[in-house]
Structure formats: C-alpha cells, structure tokens
Length: 361
Image 1 (cartoon, helix red, strand yellow):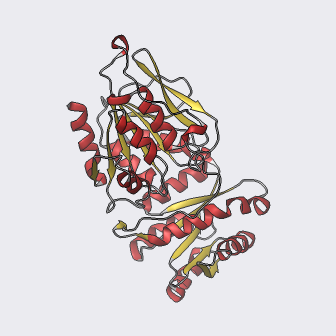
Image 2: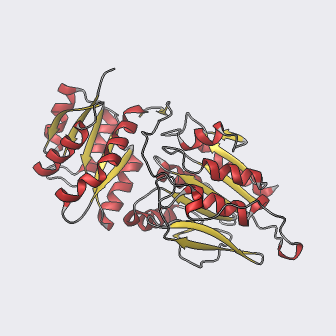
Image 3: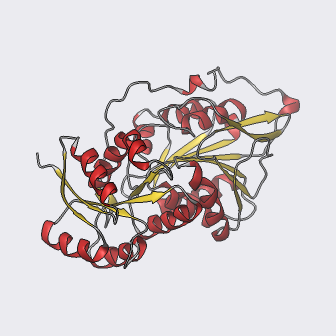
C-alpha cells in the first residue's frame, strides 16, 4: 500500500521541521517535500504530485488563502490549513474552508516548538482524513479512526435515563432542532442555516471547533442567515428564529424549565474525545425535548453523536443525516445510519427544505 505523500508549506523552518517529524512518525505518511512560500510550492506540486498539502495561513509574498483560491481553481487537491489561535487566524481559516480546504490544525500562540507534539495525533489524523477526500465530488469514503484510549461516553457528563412522559402541564408544541457536525461541518452548517426562515424553531448546534474559532464562526454565519446566530451562553433561553453554537471548549446541554428550554454550558471531560461533544448535546435533547425534537447529523469524522442520536430516536424525535455523496467525511452520519438512529439520508442541499416541511407538519 502506497504511503500518503504530503507537501508541507510554511515560511518557518522550525514549523516545517516539526510538522515533517510528526507526520513521518506515522508509517503510512511520507513528507515528499517542503516549501517556504506558495511560489516554491507551486513548482513542487507539479514535480512531486503530493496527495495532501499542509498550508500555513500567513506567509510572505502570497498569503495562504490567495494561494488556496488559485489552487482550487487550477488544480483542486486536499489541503489542511495550519492556523494561529487568534481572531484574525480564525476568520482567515473559515474563509479557507469556504474555498475548499478540507480541515485545519491550529498552532498555539506561545511556545509552539514545545507544545506542538501535543497535537501530533490530531495532525496525523487530519492529514489521513484529507487524503481520502475527493475534492471534486466531496467524500466517497468512510474514515476509520485509529484506536485511542480513554474514550469516554456521554455518561461522563450527563447520566443516561429512560425518557419518561412529560407531565401535561409542562407539555409544549415548541420544537427544537439539534445539529451535530465535525470535519466539513462549518460549511455544511452555514449552508443549512442560510436556507432557513427567520421564524424557524430554536436550533442548537455542536460543531467540533477550537474555542478561538467558535465565536467568529457564529458571527460569520449570523451575517449570512435570516436567523439570529450566536455562540451559546450559559442560561440563554432557546427562542424561535435563533441558533446557538456550542463554544469550542464547553459541552452544550439543553435543559428544560416548565415549557421553556435553555442552554447550559458544561466544562466536563472530553466525550467521544471531543468537547463540545455531539453525544452530550443529543442526550440532553432526548431527555428534555423528546418527541418535539428534530435531530440532524452533518458531515464529520468519527462516531461522536451516533449513540446520542439513537437516544433521541428512542425518545420519539425524528432524525436524519447528510448523505455520503455530499459529506466531506461520512463518519458521524454513517455511524448513525449503521446503528439505526436516523430515518433518512439527504443531500446537503435538501436538508433545510426537509426541516421546514417537518416543522410545518
């Protein structure tokens, strides 16, 4: 089996060296070259024909986003952006994802050389995932994650319980829409929310994203949607016409008080190796919203959210997932289908329409 060939593009010699060492520590990856700027990278892409690029956001002579724009027009290929954990870095990275980058990895603002090793598994995993993506038709393959110990379930944050009947005086006809996503999800979430009307039921979203990125992501989607989109805050009431995106370092939980629903933020441990975790959100929706909920799983790597979605179905919710052909990675939605948690599979451009018809019913 041929190794995944990678070209590392970064103006920092230290970063090039560290990324090369990390990637080549995996027997399935080979760094075939490095480049200090996009002009050199352009020639090396022609010569080396790499499977995946890692591309720094900020470089001299030509920034990473401008290079990416040209690359996707002339020679589309899988790209993983390397971004700083700053407001500006977040905005530029989100733009890169819009242009076709598969995913991104972040580098700490301080002491990069001594802390990047902590990100080694994530870097390797995302490069391997990128190598499976068909940039033209999006993903055609299911990604299998490597075994990693200490994979906690939603029990670590929210105890499982058998859904009970909600007392009649607390019942409500108000619906809640719960969305989970990961790799490719920033663009998928944006597309769904852009197509929904301003009077849609309240929407709660868990997207796997760093803490520095979730706020800018919410603001970006808010500018493009008729909905009021925000980063969720603890204690916020969930209202019609609003969408609440989990902060990148907190679990988002839906709680109920009487006939009203509220956002609660939880700083518990990683669940399914993520915080925020889709499993935690979906379990809380199963327990507190029940049959009034609609669950949606969008593109994403791994299996976070599948078990929670099954709990939603058992509580009476209607669930569906993004189909394989339109998903960047069909890991999370594929696993939900595998365990029988979803009733339907739909292409991304049909999801908002289905949501609106379900709400109308």
